[in-house]
Figure 1 (cartoon, rainbow over the protein chains, first blue to last red):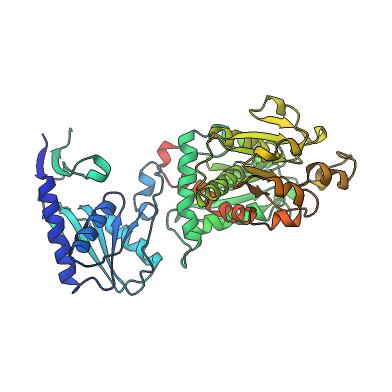
Figure 2 (figure 1 turned 90 degrees about the vertical axis):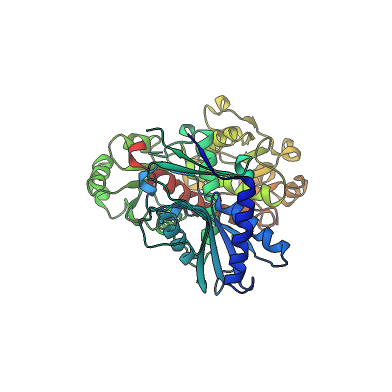
Amino acid sequence: MDRTILTADDMAWALTRMTHEILERNRGATDVVLLGILTRGAPLATRLSAVAEAQGHTLPVGQLDITMYRDDLRANPTRTVGRTILPGPIDDKVVVLVDDVLFSGRTIQAALHALADLGRPRSIQLVTLIDRGHRELPIQADIVGKVLPTSRDERVRVRLAESDGEDLVTIERSAS
Amino acid sequence: MKHLLSIADLSRAEIDSILTTAEEMHDVQNRQVKKLPALRGRTVVNLFFEDSTRTRSSFELAAKWLSADAVNVSAKGSSVSKGESMRDTLMTLDAMGVDAIVMRHAGSGSVAQAAGWVRASMINAGDGMHEHPTQALLDAHAMRRHLARNDLGDLEGKRVAIVGDLLHSRVVRSNVLLLNKLGASVVLVAPPTLMPPGAEAWDADSTAVFDDVLDDIDVAMMLRVQRERMSGGFFPSEREYVDAYGLTPRRLARLRDGACVMHPGPMNRGLEISSLAADSPRSIVLDQVSSGVAVRMSVLYHVLAGDSSTH
């Protein structure tokens, strides 16, 4: 049975708060770049940037595909690689990685490797809508929309209007 | 995808996946760090029974930029020149535990045959006059980039003329198969002596008069006159060939807006293509070369990166 964790209103509120935290943490938007991890991190990064824009701050947005850097590449069928688009050089910038769910931490590890090939940011921060725990690597988010204690056999589903037609976060027990 | 032997084996979804991934690989070529870790720990052997600089070096770069280890074996100076059979050479390399063998051989169908002998993935880098699938994929990739740059849509509905020495070309068959799968139409243009036997059964129009098709093509793909493969007189004289089939300045001027000029290289300037055409803004010859590395990276990724149990 699905349980709703965030409604569309909750999500909008969370993203607004997260944007404020990004701006506060970095004392404004100077030299800060948002990079959304494909697939659902990218629209989230765009939304964070839009909230900042409404507050009079410009946060350039890009997207990062980490397929080629995954450590489980060989364990899965080949996936079509997505596009990495940077808003400009990331050298000496503060790169804020944006993802929907933080789980084992392996996606973030892959993202850090990908960033190392793209330039040398001054610092890298991590923003995630949901932190569901069960980390396998020493990685933690700087800014979190909602901390969600889960068991391993549960599945967190983030649905976004851009790709799924609605904003909704649910948790479901796997069928097994 | 275990092997890449022929365009005929590829589904439309696989082709789209290869070309889409190649787009991303193209960006890697422009980076300061030209390296992706996807094939770390994999080994690719370039086994070339025929000489090739362009194809071999672009496969080598593709493997290296994906962090695979690449080894080049050419027939000259190897056990092949000591009389070892192709099968023994392949099985020896396979026994060393290599993951993929990129092979070029003069025998049509030889790469497909080799795939039955080895555990490694086989990639066809040109088998006789049969196929050269990665060249066709890179041609399509270069065309798509040209169309996208000029807001001309996709390959669907476009018309491509393949002109010249079709008989000795290993890429024509691959190109006809691929372009049809992508929704483009092909017209083959060559003197009857240089039209491959059986070409009438291919899914393409054909003509011996280049001037008849000039006005309604989107791509003029000029092929090299392969003098080294010609034992007899396939056309009366070079001058007459230029008059009938060369992309002369006059023919270049007749191409419609947005039409581009291609050539797989190396070019015989002044024969199948004039210098004016080769160096004109319509020419995407150098894009074809850079597309070559991107497409071969994508092919190696598709053949080697995924779960081996799904191969």
